[in-house]
Length: 170
Image (cartoon, rainbow, N blue to C red; front, side, top):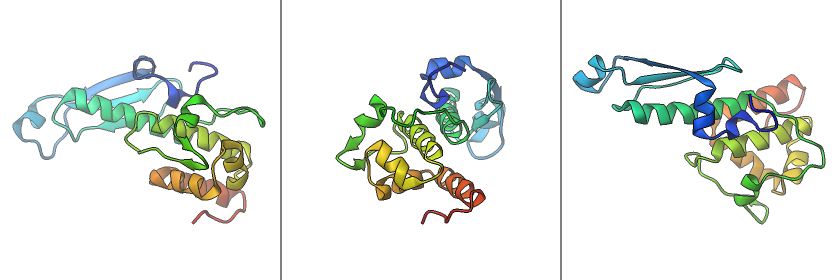
């Protein structure tokens, strides 16, 4: 992994260079092309062992893009990158911060980077979402809404909070 940069923040090219790419066939809708052509993509991130797959599109190129986005989200959820307690937020985070609101769509290419930064701050604040929101310059409700956009992320945060004896986010 590139030091100093969260793997979810890597460019598509840099992330793909860190992956083992497997092309395969999958059954399901899509007709003859799907059954005869290896359009499914499985990515294994070598440094972490995390895997992402896409096979719902008819094109190998489209499935590769979907798999890369899924891998970036998985990396954002599963890999923690230490952040200094009083360090500044990233330029990417600031780009989507409007006052105390964070505004980004889950299909935006920067979404995994924003989620990774939010989760890194939540972990640095010992799972205190209010403290993490203050560090990030947004409201607690905005940070919670951001985490809810990606259901697996929200479940992950609540599982971590439960392990620590904290109430789940609603």
